Image (cartoon, rainbow, N blue to C red; front, side):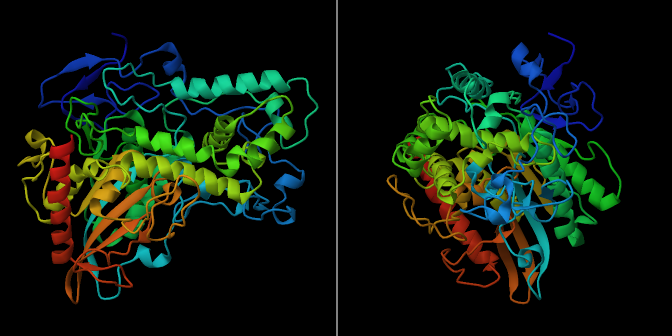
Length: 554
């Protein structure tokens, strides 16, 4: 079986002592109270995958200004000079004299100062985390005291990952997407190798593909460390006497994210470092396991429509016309098509977050028109909306299991009322694996389940049906867009607080106060507050309807 072993039960507890862990992955796993279902090497399913279990980054013949041995340095030509670029200051920020990380504890990714990328807030679900709210969301409204927080986070920035197939009986090749990008670059380089290219195109002739597969990058790990610090700072009145109860869906990058979040929280609380300060409940993924953080047990659920519609939009967008023409002029004889444009835009993000500091990739400089990035973000939004959100008849139902757990936690009910994705053998009356009465809960998952959960909660219900022929105008605060809702390290928070008018609920998405006025009985409130009674009534109605959808349609 190999040198390193992993012991599994239906739920596993991530142990902080690191026993049985590989150098590349998380701490060890001990299941002292549960029977062993299997014993295996943790997903080391190919030599290629083993070789990619690290933070990779493309390399050039030059070195990064941050001192990393691989990567790129900012061009001194006109495309790197923010204020003098003829098309947009937004895409080419002002140059910073000193190199630093582009990720900030309080605000997330900086898209205003080079060498950070100015287009990063339009990379759809590949955007690094950026705070979308004001400072008002970082404190309780006047006269209120926060007494409970349910936190839900996406994993941090990662290397390319392959979506699992809809049919669980089909083989899954986790490294396929990384291989796809590598083949694309190899083929493109073969066509441009002997040409005399100008910047911003010439860099690609000397580019060496070196991205990893499926794993967090160092930048992504730091996003979660910063998230843990921010969480402690934001809720210090509760956190100083309480630690979060943490769970993670069973994938390395998700559990690694939970661990890094815990490390950041611990550092902020104790002003010292500790690798794995808190235990993490690990919920197995797959069609055979009940998992409210990443449900796979609805056999008729499919996200294919999201992929189909985003491709349809892409072929009618600016990317298929103006952008393709421009890139083919920059790369003569490359014969690029729309899907190739998408590949290059994808690599802008993946190459950027492969840098420890988030230094903007030269792939990003291939796209000088803000309308191109608007189209790219919309391309991502269509996939989420029609694949996992309101545009899919079964999308919101995929998130109702987690919402039912939130209902139980808010009501201090040890039994979860759910007929969808909750594992009752684990959740019900189990204070070790599903404790009731805690002040802080932190759960970690992927962007697709978070899209479904946002719809199950009833958030972003003002988003109009999204057009496939053009970009639908979406309210930046109340509407759903991939970059503003599910970027890397995205975070939702449901806060319960005691106010002068009684117990109230507030919901934050990426530290942005969400309007709840469409929930019956909540009304419009500048602080985003809704009476707990009205909020729970709303969730109860959501639960009844979406459980019925699950039973009828799954």
